[in-house]
Amino acid sequence: MSTAILAPGSRGRRLSKRLLQVVITLFGLLLLTFTIGRVMPIDPVLAIVGPDADQSTYQQVYQQLGFDKSLTTQFGIYFVNLLHGDLGNALLTGKPVVDDIIRVFPATMELATMAIIVGAGLGIPLGVLAAARRNSVSDYVVRIISLAGYSTPIFWVGMMGAAGVLCLAWLGRRRREGSPRAGWYGAAPHRADHR
Image (cartoon, rainbow, N blue to C red; front, side, top):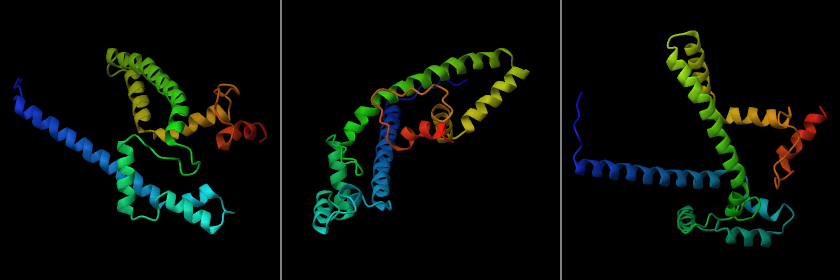
């Protein structure tokens, strides 16, 4: 077994290379996010001003949002604002994106914490069981469950969880305090009761 230790210079080069990859990846994601926002078939100006607005109001909001500038200029403004911590306003609501993030952050942390607790609470004992009884029926069952868990798309698991909680009332008819009732999620329990 080789115990070769990397020279300090090569570690620095590898770290620099990794950091450069992270920067390039983040820049690519920003560019992709910006591009998707611009090619969507939804007209954000119309969503803000409404279908009954006159042409002058439409043009004023169009210019305020910077859509009259070139795409490269728009991306530059977007990037500089992002570096200053300005995430902008949600195009459909007109409210600051930071306010939306702050509003949903507690629920996100609750979900993430519960996911870690459930994942560790199930994964560690099942892993110990599979390791202790290698090549037994319980080992194969744990392997199949693990493979199914890794293979299942996370968005599908989320949709099934939402359907179970909202439509099948697995957790009762409670809702998180401060959560809105509007939209599909707010109407789902009512629809489930009146099939």
